[in-house]
Length: 294
Image 1 (cartoon, rainbow, N blue to C red):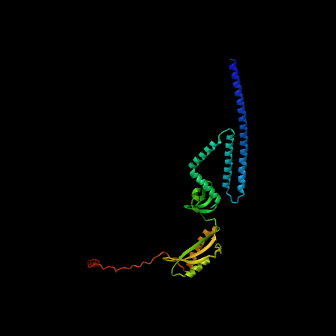
Image 2: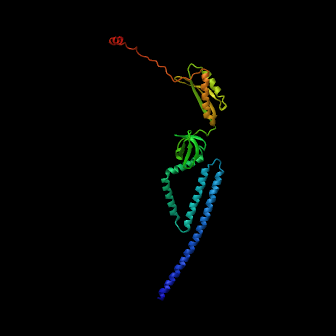
Image 3: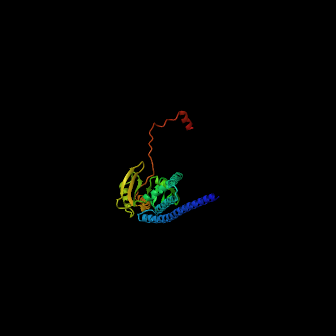
């Protein structure tokens, strides 16, 4: 019994010493992990603010993209901090990183369409083919930009409808921006009769170009653009500010009609001359002529 008791006491003392050593080691690991977590959290917050402030100095950098990139940087740092903390406790981080990579691939495949919209949104915000307030046309979508998000872009059509378009659809098609350039060209084409005075019609068109909204440089030009089936098409080519383009087009079209009427210049309807060429009408048989007389 004495030998057995001695062995038990020795085993207990050995286990206690080992437990104490493990406790001390894990205490230092836990303390180190806590310190790493605190420092990592502070550094991630500072990095987010530095990124946000730094991007703010970039000219015309979009506010939405500033927030997204600064948040992305913060959570990336926190992810690395979490991996380092696990390494403090002896966890094999290589397997964790591999698991995170596999999970990222799976999530990417599951959210492929969403990620495409995010990638397209980032490209739209960086390259800026359009901005808020501009009128664009992309395929069957046309309207004024109200908001550019990471997933979709909100537009307002000319008749006041709300349209939310996926960013991938806008990025994958040709964009026509009607507001980006400061000036726009317009051709005011009007058909007049072949018997009308062409020189007078051209003179009237040049008189219309004296409108204050029509730019002097490039200079307006009036010319005969087409000899149609029923009309001679005279055209006034002029430049105007993009903001005045639509209103100027409407006003000049109305004025042209009124002045042409005052000067006796017609705007003919589409018409065709038909010439029937063929044998003479056949004579009716005698029997039918007799019936017709009776």
